[in-house]
Length: 350
Ligand code: F0G
Image 1 (cartoon, protein in one colour):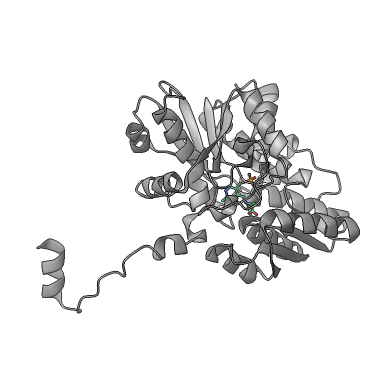
Image 2 (image 1 turned 60 degrees about the horizontal axis):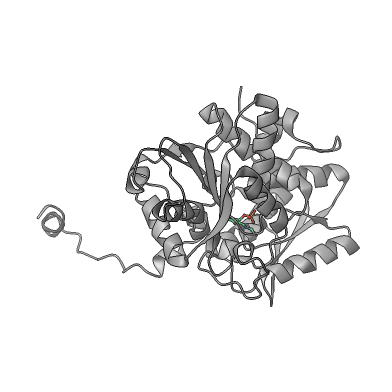
């Protein structure tokens, strides 16, 4: 049977109101890619997989939550949706809203959103407002606006976002025919780690799968859940997770603790190094998306995790195409040669 997206695939497991009217771009169903060389590089002796969420319709995992949130909003009769975003939520909201025929308004921190994300928001036709403030401040604004006006909030404070996002846990268990021993993923506003935990617990109850340990990874300059207090001016190259007051921070800490795992920080250098290592496996992800795997490598190296005999999944949340500048700004302009067979032969085969 043809795949028709998450709301159909996992209808029996999603807690969505009866009025929900499915809006889908056939999101989800993303590959779980084995990366044995990367595992060898970390010492070997374990199975390592990448859940490549950059292969969703708008290039990030946000589409899982957005199909649910927009479908609920449409069914409820909403005419407009609003969100604050570091970029990916905005692009996803824009795509699903236009598909549903709804107005989409997105607030983004001025000058802090990667080019591929902003381009998506514009291409899908959403109204973009840059605010002179951080993501956290923008989120506070959209929450207030949605309380005062008929604007459906589609940030992950919206419970239906988590309903959609928990499907990634179902897919991993379905593909492996078991739960992994550990799941590593980046943490920003902390909705995704909360949603994965909901999903794993639900499968544990319904399908008797085990529960993985969760390793949540924040960027060192934006790590409120590691510091134990909000960060007023978060700073990191991983702009997607440049967040100082995660809306679902407590839920995320609880999830990590309940799972027997934890939330740690990885430096920008560690994140970018892992972005490079993933690219050399043929998996190009945006910087934030490499944080989960970077945290895993760090924990193994520090001796805090013994991976031997384990099955570990790292979630790569967004595609590298989202943030081309991080690569192009550092690269040398490719060499230019004349269109001459001899010259090209000499250069290529010596
Ligand atoms: N990875 C990417 C690529 C993201 O865009 C985000 C969040 C995260 C990880 C963290 O997920 O917030 O659920 O803990 N991006 C949000 C946005 C904040 O606006 O696109 P989280």
